[in-house]
Amino acid sequence: MASPEIKIEIASVKVMRSYDHCHFEITLSSSCTAAPGDVDELRKTAARLADKAVEQYKIARLNAQNLLADKAEYEHESARVERLLAIPEAERTAEDKAEIKASQDHQWSLGRRYDYEDDWQDDQD
Image (cartoon, rainbow, N blue to C red; front, top):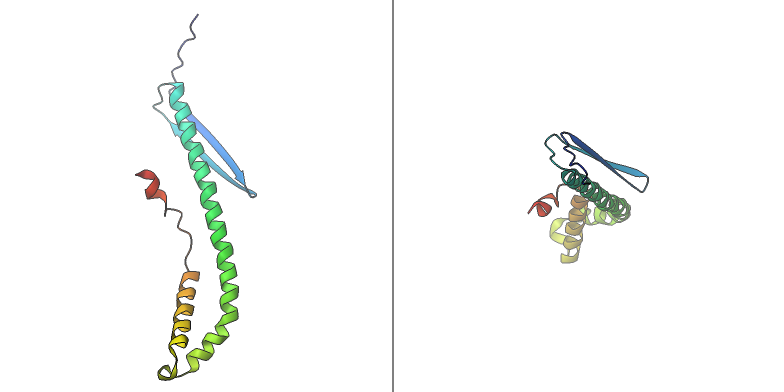
């Protein structure tokens, strides 16, 4: 005897991932689901989004750790840069100018944050 096909009018799925004491929860719902296979696709989409959230968290956490290390290194070397800036510009060597420029570039990079949408467009193509 064949099992009757189940018609689903409203479907809701919830997927949760835990990583590094953080919890990522994705809940999706659909009101026009026609078959159990559609609910399964909804579940897979939620799972992919949760996995993506974990991967983005890993990148953001690594970037934050690198920023802390960079800030400590920058503070250590800032005294030298301050001494170089005290030298009149006409008397600075090319190496002095390069070191000042590198320090300024490094300081600018410390202000950057991970943009969670950076890789979103790549996945949509």
